[in-house]
Image (cartoon, helix red, strand yellow):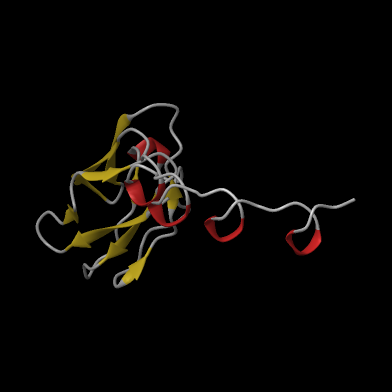
Length: 131
């Protein structure tokens, strides 16, 4: 699970960076407003409060939204206050293992050995056969 920051950069129109943002299921994204005017990212003008209840003031950030889709998809969004400003979040397939890499078997990527300290475990206390 990762958290990604999408920066709103000043301009005419302002831009979302990166655009598109690539993420995985269960990742989260938030927006940082680096512009001198407020912005309000949302799925559409009709759904302006779908992700956040208020606009993002200059030099501040939004709360994070979780990306929990059933399958990979592309999420398009706009700035409610400036409809010409658009962005895309591409939610791709699941990560493999820890840190996005294939998980190795055993501790530290080595094959797990049997017994304590890699030796065969002896029966009974102090390595003697219990009677």
